[in-house]
Image (cartoon, rainbow, N blue to C red; front, top):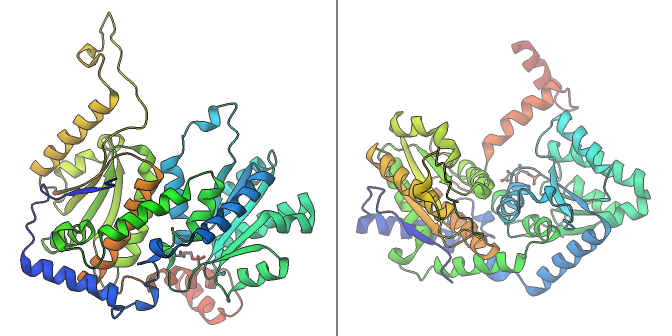
Amino acid sequence: METLKLDIRKSGIAISDAMKQQALEAASLLYSGKGEGNDFLGWVNLPSSITDEELDKINATAARLREKADLIICIGIGGSYLGAKAVLEAMSNPFRFLHKNDTCPTVVFAGQNISEDYTYQLLEASKEHSIAAIVISKSGTTTEPAIAFRLIKSEIEKRYGKEEAAQRIVAITDKARGALKTQADNEGYTSFVIPDNVGGRFSVLTPVGLLPLAAAGIDIRALVRGAQAMEQATAPDVDFDHNPAAIYATTRYQLYKSGKKVEILGSYEPRLQYVNEWWKQLYGESEGKDGKGIFPTSVTLTADLHSMGQYIQQGERTLFETIISVAAPTHHVTIEGDEANLDGLNFLAGRRISEVNAKAELGVQLAHVDGGVPNIRIEIPEVNAEVIGSLLYFFEKACGISGYLLGVNPFNQPGVEAYKKNMFALLNKPGYEEESKAILARL
Ligand code: PA5
């Protein structure tokens, strides 16, 4: 199955042979492992290196959690959260909580913020359920998930006792280091390893993404199969003109060089909203450094045409758009005729809602291109696990190429440390005495 078609005809970009060569050199830096950040290239061949045994172990652990609990709380932030959240939202029915006979365990997220109200509301709601937890942190020291885990672990231990709690908590962390690794060993939790050479935002196809998704009943084999297909479709021996990741990376790079500094990722399917959020982290953390990088932002359409549409059409001309276009909906709904026709919509009677959505998409594309917003279109046939796996890997591969084209190290994130230092200084964390004095003097 072809999982993705890239169309750059409305981007206004023509890619020269010299530019193709530059992109292929950037791609070959990934494959040779000679570029900056080459300690973090484990994701490149991850899909094809995942074994059946690994998937069996993940599915078996997920099945155990599903047997024990009807609410599984997944704790993590950033790359230890967004991949699972993106796929889960894409694959779930947003109204399932309204179906009285729904039996599938619910996976919810914690540790992706430090909101007292969010934490309270989750802990309160969890009291009505049998619970289990998946705690994810590569470093094992990130403050947000550590706070959430402390509270959720305590709730599980109070309710079920320490021994049973150890059966209900699964840790995903570094193979040897960090506070979470130590806790997992001391408490006897089942644990999974985040490979050293896979950074957080590239980790969706490791247990970080796969275990929560399997726990939610999502077909992770199909997800991996889609990623494997895209790994092949973007392999080193594929020529530039047939490699969608290389073409996407190059097109956005040329747009950036021509003054288009903001990329808006959009879709007409609200279920893809968290794919946008995952993509923002992937590109924002990978490229936004050394005073460079496209600012990644997103819209969900047509809703945001009624809020951001005005700016996109007529504001600063520094924008371009990338639209994930879904060719076919999963379900079938037609618009009914109405005798009175007070809303004047009888011209749509008998037609599918998806036809209206597709025409909105086409009309917006033409209007935005006319208004000076170049358009890149990524068409996917439908939303299913295989297609989403392919889409995620496509964006990862393009991100690696794009970062090297831009001349940055796409695999570090030195900038995210700055807020942590201030926060610890303001909280008087031991070891931050000097920073505390300095920051208080500034207030
Ligand atoms: O992409 C990244 O590396 C970050 O977003 C991390 O995933 C995030 O900060 C969470 O880190 P950790 O998994 O160590 O708790």
